Image (tube, rainbow over all chains, first blue to last red; front, side):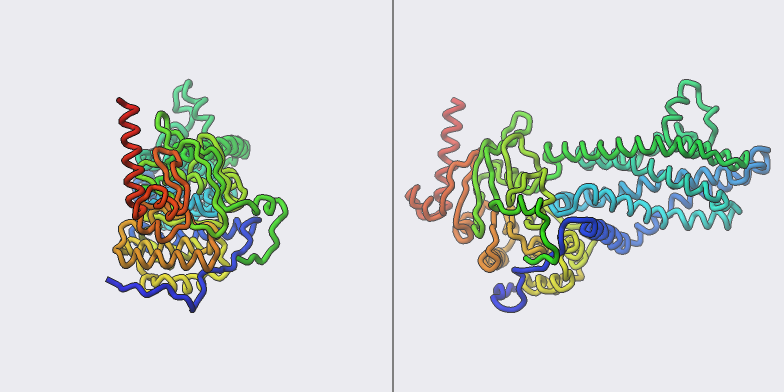
Length: 289
Length: 265
């Protein structure tokens, strides 16, 4: 056991410190950067986290890529629209990984019982959310960019050949992913890690509804209004319009953006409501024995 | 504490209140009343112990002071700021240490302290960590992951985190729980030294009567969410005609049980 020296009466003073101003945009940016640094330290410390980032996107892309190759040889549609399935997989991964990147960073705080420390620090809840959103972009880049490159090398599909519309697709999908992640993170904050499964599975509800791999007309008529109320449906329809008909449909992107603004607003207020509820219920303050 | 920019007027308005002011504070969880209408105020530079058995309301009170818990009714003001609504105005002036709150396990001690120093706006992050590491004797632990530390080492690191911003108000929840006697004694001396040199206000919850007698100049004794005593340790010992604060605590706890039994009979 290490013997403790007496507290030093002389020597370096710990009783005074110079602090930077805690308010204003620069202070906010500094706190957001501190949180990003915290997650960067974490990813750097674990090689399994690096592998996890790219593992599933790669497996999915390989499976759908080979299927696309097979279908292209046997179906006129797939022969005509090369990259239809791989494009869908890659765009779906932007949505799914974007949400996961946000939620997993949030879960890291829950797993390490650090959330109470953060919530009593000068970090504001909107700064915390901005740090999580930035981490979602960073994680997405690390996980999906290598897979996009491999899709080009292995199957000759270049996602960037979608051109400028790709930016609109990307922005819309990432906004949807953040809206979903805000709701799931809020639920986990309020109900604890018992609700963790939501973080992993909630996004899959969208998979059949937002027409990732098939056009809207495939859905039964009664289900179409629900599908059309989801921003990603318009993104995937837009992608098919480019790949099959060679037409960019900005109207679909504007509709997706409008819906995303509604989704994000609902997500933000849902998170705030769950945070408030956690403060009332005591979930944030599990400080005692 | 120095700032390189002037404090905006609107913020100065809430900066001048006492470190802690609690009025008619109540916290209910459905049928359970954890804190039941308590009132107290802490003056600058005071060291106060929050004392009470399990479930007396100590941790709940501290959580409300920190803004982690919303009161059912009543009011908490920290340096004049209403908690938790105005938490952002004063969060940089206080800090908290508890063996029951962790920091990320995979991050090294230095990484954890760096992140928190930046969150609290410390100007010279690296220098501050070096000074705290030397003073709290954690230099050898700086490159070790937090998850690989012993309970005593974690407590010292947690205290370093709590002192990063040289808080004017330091809250502690059972600061010496699970520490060996020597480390506990060292921690008490460090806290005494910090309070006297910094002129900081300290509020700590504890079950350890010897610690309370030694550290605090005021004791707030809680029972079933009520304040039943609020006095200096020596005054309490005199009032109950006992030799130690531990005897006083046992007397009070016994009396409380007898009253509860009588009420249930």
